[in-house]
Image (cartoon, rainbow, N blue to C red; front, side, top):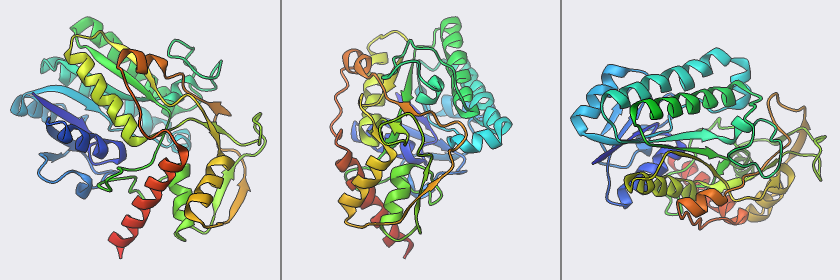
Length: 328
């Protein structure tokens, strides 16, 4: 059995590849390197530079490597960019995912795990958000992911493709062993931006909106360590292989931190008092998004190990320092 990881040269995908290899799985990576890095893929892993929307290529990979499971990460993920370029996001995230799902059906792939997002909830009707809550995305990014969820559910029923949809909340941190991390210099993730500011790689950190209906006026998010997130994927794969039915699950810790709380944590962990400035709100940003993760814990028996925000920040900071040495 072999697992195809799309987007395996990216931030979360590269962690997934290491986790699968650590578990003794055979892995093939497909990534077009639009935002990923070839050096982020674990050495010795079969790696094909290509697009998930290229059905002949994907069909050939499924046949050649006898792919029995696909874990699909490849996507564009920046909410403000999706507002500026909605058609690009619908193409990359929805249209190409449809092609991948069709290739999975044609190739008799047995299991499919999809990297979705809490952005499908939009401004959640309640906090914490539960999987059966209304999905009313406020950005093309969230809409493009929801479209793929719908396609996967429909295809799964029609063609007997068992799948797990994992809705990520805010992913952060880096591999505790220092093998990979968030490597894009222009990444917009708050912890990435703040740790780079702490190392003098950015002049300041912008806080986009301080007038939200939250205790300190800044957005609140549920931050999940990337290693705990990929463990949820491993657990989902084991669940499907054991005959589990298709399902949708939140991936978060069930508690949120405001933008200012995260910045204060980065300052404390790094020991650096970097510059912070207020800026206007960004389009598509909801005020408060926190997961109800009990279904993943009960069904998958998922047990996270890095729930402390300080730990998440320290791992992210260690990776930034390693990247700095790599550049030099």
